[in-house]
Amino acid sequence: MKKTLMSGFVLILSLALLVFGALTALAFNSRLISDTKQELLSCAALTAKEFDPKLDADEQASAFSAAIGDIRITIVSSDGTVLGDSQADHRTMENHLDRSEIIQASASGQGTSVRNSETIGKKLVYSAVETPDGYFIRATKEVAGVFGHLISVVPAMVLSMLFSLLLAAYLINRFSVGFINPIIEMNDSLIGVKDGGKLLNPKDYRYGELEDMAVKINVISSHLSKYISNIQQEKEKLNYILDNVGEGFLLLDEKLNILLINNSACVYLNCRKSAVGEHILLAVRDFNFIQCAERAIKEKTRLLLDLELSGKIVESVFRYVEEESGFSASLIITMSDVTENRNSVKMRREFFSNASHELKTPITSIKGSAELLCSDLPISEKQRKELLTRIGVESERMNMLINDIIMISRMESGDLAGDIDNIDISEAINESLIEIAPMAEQDNLTVNVEIKPVFISANKKDIRELVSNLLVNAVKYNRQGGCVDISLKEQNGEAILKVRNDGEPIPLSQQRRVFERFYRVDSGRSKTIGGTGLGLSIVKHVVDSLNGAVSLESSIESGTAFTVRLPVSADN
View: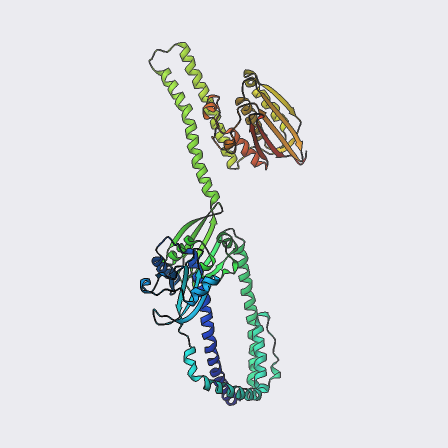
């Protein structure tokens, strides 16, 4: 049997290889040219997007060719004049308006052709696209091909094919009963190994060798099926983990082909998950990102790149990795949104700067007054009392500022002191009314109050701070003889607190900034009446911590009104 099988297979394989070789050569030549056309069209289209008519066309042609690889780039003007070429002197080249690929591109936007180049004398594939500015970008690549070598042997190949078909049909028919059919069954079993494979019955085969092979195939199929299943499960776990992390992840080989990419990276780079296997140039449109990847692989180093995407700052880390155990990955890229961290650092820097500036004024005033009191200069009793009064006022102002800074820092860090209780906002309002009564009487203000008990879940101290800041501001920034209107009601599951005064309106351009720390609409007036610039910032933080909202309405006709909306207590 062994001799028979060997002689039969040698004959069949010899004939099959001859036929396969000829057919493959023909198919390969056609497919090679077709693939080359599509490749060049893609390269020409990508180059057209990057082409700048204002820059030197010849230099751009060379740069584009160097970036893409072994592809020749030619830039042609709308009248056919060659403006640049990456391999030849464009000044010696003929007018290209009559080239077929240029004619096609002029008519439909893109065109291709295959011919011998008059410039370099080789068989080339040409693909051209027209830019929006009327220029033509042509990509060219040499195709060695095999078609020309086959023409001389076509008659012999035809006869060989006919003879091979007849002989193969005869031999296959002869061996099919005792040999081909069992092999087909074994092949089907191996093909289906992923799903467990088809179990073979060794007793169905008349040759002992085939019986042994069937037994071994059954064992191998069982082991391979389990192994493939385990690999698939591990792959699915890895993909699940990568797709559910907030950081973007890419894995590239040394040629910048994408080996692995997760969902977050696709969102950051605005590309598809199916980009796996593609060159990064075809999937990613950010030139700086691509340049950084190329540099990291070329220099075999670690690089950082910040991308600004839709108002977010995305930090990209490029890590070059050495090839190990045949694994071809060369670059690992991780991407993370660092907007909040960067903004926090900026806010802390601004906070300390503003706080230092605000503390400097009262400290300077106290220091100056104290130095005058301690000096040998003659000071009257009246001047002495004025200096002491100034020290007291500035000390109180500094104390208020420090308390406000501590309060807002505590809120930003989430370290809110005290327990959450069922608080009646009207009680906090009544307490604050007692606080503002002397100031309102001094400025001859009318305070109108229309409140009802409304309960919310909050820390009592925080609510008192919120209400106190709103009411004190309404009095401080009011006009002489004006009104302060305070209302509190429950509506649609919300506690609605509104505080209005008749003071100078806040300009529309500044209304969005009044809740910023240390921001004052009129800084001179705020300092005169003792404002710290932190009151409304504290209000905003308290409201945000309770999942509420605060809004501002200000006009000459209706004055200035702050409206706070907070969710009422579930036990209310």
